[in-house]
Length: 269
Ligand SMILES: Nc1ncnc2c1ncn2[C@@H]1O[C@H](COP(=O)(O)OP(=O)(O)OP(=O)(O)O)[C@@H](O)[C@H]1O
Ligand SMILES: [Mg+2]
Image (cartoon, rainbow, N blue to C red; front, side, top):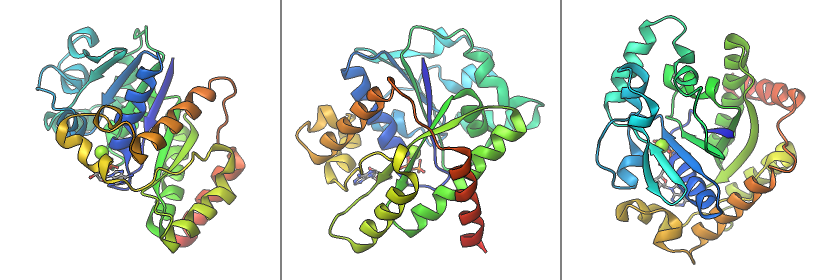
């Protein structure tokens, strides 16, 4: 079972769009997927028009069983959703000791899935610390521009810190360039920078596509909304590359991680 957290502390980087379409695409390729929304904004529930029911808050702080909170969404695809009450979970967990391990503890008997995909919030909250401690892999969606590139170094630094402090071993196994527009000079400049530095684990870029923005309004993944769109093609290409990684997993080396951290501190100063 691959446990993947889709994370970037930068807001609006394409985390939720990537989580939904990656999970939907994997499930369409016969992979059994659990999607977890760890963001109090509850964007997954809103994007897929889900009613509220028992959710991740009940699992984390109300002692509910995973089976009561996980619901089927489509063929091969289950969901553990969230809503605003997750803010309360965040506050409750923040006051407890060792609360970074709650998600791992609650899901330790989880089985039957090929993939667990976690949509993280744009922060380094206790909830995201839980997500990173639980996950084995982190995928970082990065807008192809200056601020996106800057945020990437900082995110890698945060993952290194969390691994160090909590003894976890989460590896960055995919960097996904998002909001790419080939007519835009800045997008090409930063895509080149990403290619030079992160070649081994860099996904093909996800192009800007209005259909990706529209799909949540209809409560659908891009594949149900418009399977011929550029968004659907780009996300299916990502899905195939993720499946292909099952044969041979690559991740950021310690050396590249440390280099990124150094670059992030220089750009921050
Ligand atoms: N490739 C794309 N082309 C056009 N619009 C996109 C694309 N990817 C995402 N969007 C839109 O950009 C906005 C931000 O995307 P998304 O919600 O996926 O980011 P996020 O990182 O989850 O945000 P947050 O940090 O608030 O959780 C949304 O309106 C989404 O529909
Ligand atoms: Mg989001």
